[in-house]
Image (tube, rainbow, N blue to C red; front, side, top):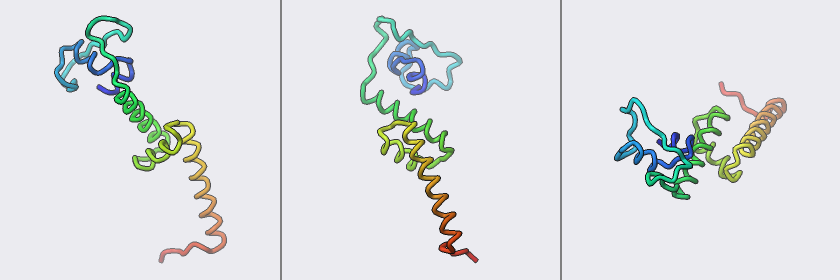
Length: 118
């Protein structure tokens, strides 16, 4: 329901009211009606700003996790938080740190600073 709400710009409450639902459980439904977000009818409702912010961060986290091809949500969340939830900046910093680590270990290996496991 969160994804539909963000995708169509309509609150979850409006979608529930428009479809006469009592909760967010929509998996059993064969179809779902999405109300027009610009409509002024009584079923529309405003987003709670905190809920909207939470949903936006959740979507950014999912996007960033796909970009870095990791399931480590703590690392993905860390990079986003450190970059004010700007996905582009977070990805650039992530790539820079990965490049630094690769270079560091390559140099350490060349200089014999890494021990080989036997």
